[in-house]
Image 1 (cartoon, rainbow, N blue to C red):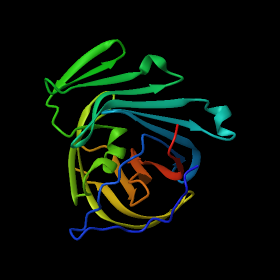
Image 2: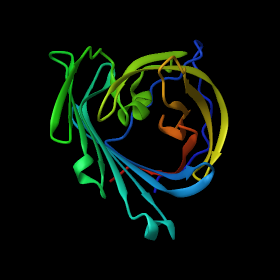
Image 3: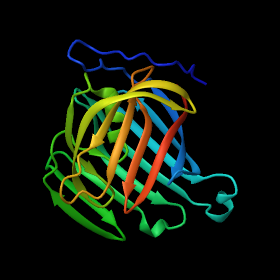
Image 4: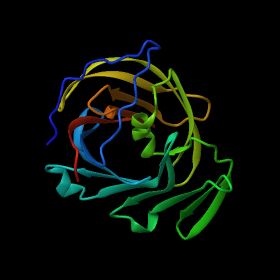
Length: 234
């Protein structure tokens, strides 16, 4: 298991952090909470092969709850790594109990369109812009930016739609999670008209610029992930 450091706050004169490259492989594990009650775990795995990457995430209940809800939610993002960081090409959202509801989004950068595949149908949406991310890659794109800007604007692709996201950066302070204590910067989504999910992400300074906490509020329900461990390996 990776040595877990208490991260120092490393700021440049401009107030933004220098980029911290991810290793060839990285496993990141979170505790998952719903409205403050522990629900289960989330395990993310990042792997790169040359200029290509693969991100996988699995969420599942734990303890006695796993007997009542033995479901795994699987997310997967595949694409390339370039000068601007992650460039997803395919995003998958699956539930083990409802395979017929698997959703796939293919990002066609040549035509700037997204092809959504769901329940045997394909819907194509134009307007894909440079810098777009998917629901999973957006969380790890921070590690590939040269600096952490005060404002981030990009599109986010889910398995079924394309939405505009805007984040503002704030000092996140020291976050204490099961993995340890980390100095962070907090990115909070600006809730424009039509936004359905309030998203807040706390990004660690080091050893890797990964999310320490992730909080999503939707339809009155608060889901939160808290970092448990990270290992440079499969």
